[in-house]
Length: 206
Image 1 (cartoon, helix red, strand yellow):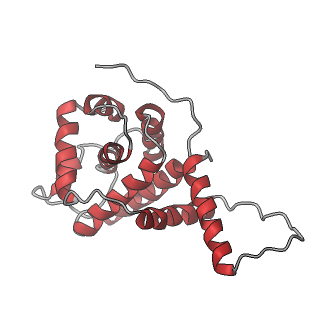
Image 2 (spheres, one colour; image 1 turned 90 degrees about the horizontal axis):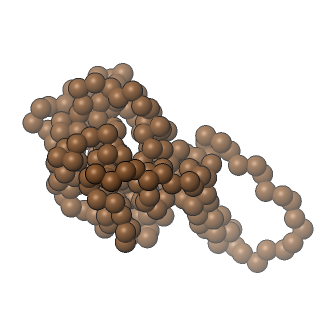
């Protein structure tokens, strides 16, 4: 099996905010103690014990070694949301969230990026066996009904959700005052700010 190759790039904001969202959801579901039926598709992702690595540490590990584009994490979030909508009885918790993460990122990479590592490499990044990685990928694809396409509009809407979450975690400084006249309408200005925020969220580190 190939050795892991570490990326030297700064961790983008999307990794931090996505890990924060999923960690919060997992903690809430842990507290609620929602059981998962052994026959449910989500049971394949359930581990026997809570991993020692945090959700943020795990996602940052994926970013450092998987070599996928930052946009893949937005798409992975979309896929996880599609899973949750299709299977409301299931829940993300501390016993399954790590496997859902590595599987959703793997699925997103194959859909988004022209070049990516194979399943054996992703299994090593995720700390699971190749056989389990293959099974999880198949289970996940069936769980979301092979609904992999993401339109620009949907991508932008999820970027906005992640952007708002990022701003709640660390509000940006107020923009500098200026006397220049702007010909944009309020809607156009708001749209441009949202696009700039989405670009900053995806492509730049926190």
